[in-house]
Length: 349
Image 1 (cartoon, rainbow, N blue to C red):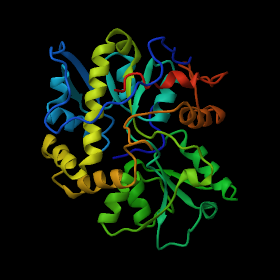
Image 2: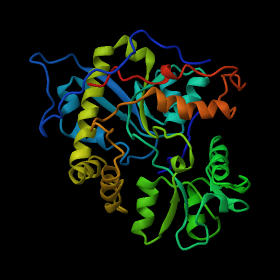
Image 3: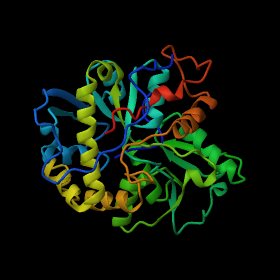
Image 4: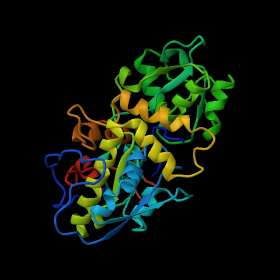
């Protein structure tokens, strides 16, 4: 799984139907989600995945397996990852919702995509600068003059430069764009550092006996951000707000379950995706536990999905300040986005 700092590409218009969050409801029982006495009308929701199934997606599979989507009147159709990004599918109305990232959604909105984040799947950054633990690099400024194994996303180098400079370095290094081979390049000492997704590649490296040392971006003054989010087509949200709320509520129940019972949730993820994890069924189990143990799924109040303007403005503002946000014609934005239009808590239960 490759979940780096960024994936993806005038400002999205805000909607009067989108505002602040309402109080959260208790988690459901393991067998069914709370429902009204009258069954709600069925609505189809096409969910576009960003990659092959993994623990960023566990809550969806839990809610589907437990029957919570069906009880909520939602026919969930999971669209497997292909060559088209979820942001593109949402903008083209070929999916109602999809897995995105704060940076990816910001890039897409800058280019005119009318999409919005309705829930934070991960409350904070799960990626970090990684080096071999037994190597000589013990702090970011020592990355000057070294080789970075990267993925080709536009905000990688600016982010690394910011962290290295914050530690007193110059932010000067060589970049080798290797995509999925970046991790092995680091492990084989063909590169000096990369950016692992600690909840997946980091867990996998540990299982393989590879010890990594991490430099967390936020430890060096870099703004924290929502690494993985649930994004939806804004036009669908406005046209079908009731169905959207029912879909999000069932999804929240699924991720609440994953946060409370990680082992059982990971087992459901594996069972719902036959063959996907045959090579390593321990990885999703360990990854799910990692997410729970390190507090990625729930906010400080124990709630799933909540988002704040401060966090969206901090990191998305960094992307603008670096000149990385461009419009549909590829020209840098002349003014910042309305960051409040990029997310909403309105559809959370």
